[in-house]
Length: 640
Image (tube, rainbow, N blue to C red; front, side, top):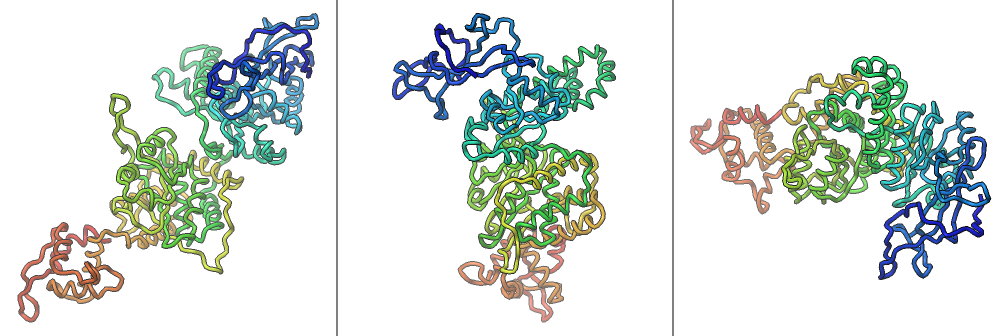
């Protein structure tokens, strides 16, 4: 490539600066000036035979005094222009009727003929950087047309820059190749700065070997999710989301059903694919992109593999590991099958017990996880509305305690269709808060309204003899494969998860609703899982009895006292004395270290409709007290 411009006239710019044409320099505002006399790079565009068609030339932007203009990322800003040979050794500053082609077209054609995977970044310099590693690549400029057929049955990897413009470019190319290329994937390089690209990644230590490893894990590019469409467009929208093979199978019948020619249908589908792609936003994290596993997934193997991966890094009892695995699969089936959304709570008495590790593993295994240790109610419900994520909240004991607005958002998302009402402009609207949520905290200092919506995994610090592998809190190939398998399992089975499972005894109301979908997943898996899941549910629920409200605890203890004493009535004094003898319960140290009083007992029982009255004891004394029959209704309603 030549970078010499001897004797050239100063051209008129026909390119576009990467940022605004006015740039702040120091304290003054000055328009940037293209430095036409000092080109930084020249990129040759050739036809398939290797003949030069045109060049794309990069020039620096400078201020009036010649100082470089910096972009928002601190890099020297630039402007591009296209030019073509004039046949006399000079250049013409436009392309006229010269058709634009993919960059490094001869190399591209050879790679495609050889069946190699082709990378498509945004920009010629990035293509050249890839070729230095012998990685076939090309750049598709915005004015390039009629290039898609080159990629028929090709394997393509799109590489967006880390900004909205880069994602838009990827989606434009993806839409053009969708239905033509055999496979289109997206590779988002990890650790990129804002507006960063592969050149930044290489400068930070990226290698060809690591690039190839990441490419193997790259998820498939997909058009953006659907919006509500007019009835006449729904069929076109459905066809636009099909793979190339599946669309080819359906197009003839679909054209007949719609009463149009196949060529017209093809055009409409292509337009719809482009529209869908341009609406897509960049994903927040690479693990949000998931390509479904190519074949049916065995339920037994999926549950066991998720459990095994969790127990590899966290000390979990089998019931806890199974519960977490079923919850993760439930998160994948959530959109299509969940009516209730139990919160997965990881807790422990002390730090260093594996809560954060377990939450991070759940985050890499659940769909579209969004982790936070601090937020507001408004940010949370708008995030749920925008991304439909799996919310992961660590340090919830500091974020949710004494934060009623945020807790209200968390609690409201337990039931499908619930949300928060807010004004959007002048109009009120309901923001959905329904999505999977997992939280971690030390202890259980949460209101009953939140705890009753939780499935609680109580972790303990590992013993010296316990052997678990350190988790580096990074995504890896095994986690990616488990996500792919969970997505495929959900696609194949979500329609059958609406059956009502048999619940364990005592699993009524919210407790049963928390476990309903997870038990349905276990039933569908079959084998040993239905019994093991119910045993796990019973064990987990029993472990959560310490989270009973104080009223329920009191009822449970009074029921035990009646059973132990084998009487049908007790005076108030006898009852408070018996309560005070129960070790570890609050009655002996009720207020100021004193035994609970008969009056305090009566106040706690009054909401249940239980009041003391005059009773005759076996020794014929008449005292204030309670008959067992007074409690039967409350025992039946509130105790398992």
